[in-house]
Amino acid sequence: MLMRTDPFTELDRLDRFARQAFGSAARASAMPMDAYRAGDDFFVHFDLPGVDPESIELDVERNVLSVRAERRPSAPEDADMLVAERPTGHFSRQLFLGDTLDTERIDARYHAGVLTLRIPVAEAAKPRRIPISGGDRKQITG
Image 1 (cartoon, rainbow, N blue to C red):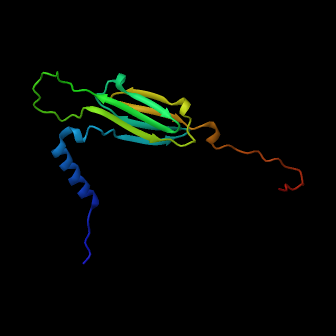
Image 2: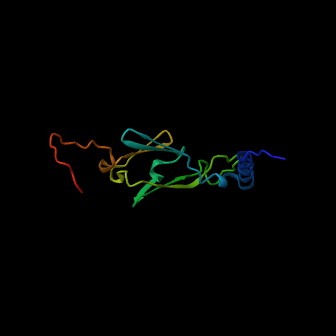
Image 3: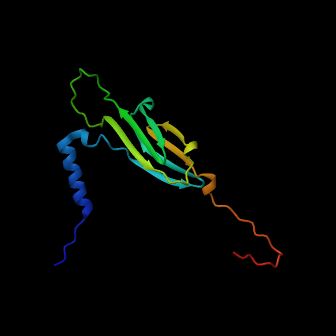
């Protein structure tokens, strides 16, 4: 007998179990992102709602981009929390960038809870047309 299973159903069950068992701490390290190429630039968007821009750190070492941020609780320390569903704490993510990207010219902006990075493609990696000389009947030998 052939059984058909959906692996995503099992992952969803594990995720719900972790949230119930560990509360917001299970989600505190999440930093969802989108990444795409448009023309000669790569764009990366990180969701960081409620994060103070001063707490965001970006570092590039070799081809590794590290993003770190912290979301602090909004309630005072002496408050009696009734519901605490919004994750707080430290968030981090690392991206391995290809050699074709110009890490010296990364542009970072934070607006409406989204950190956007624009990473240009390195000039040496851009497609270029190679001129062909003509009219000479000599063959190139190698």
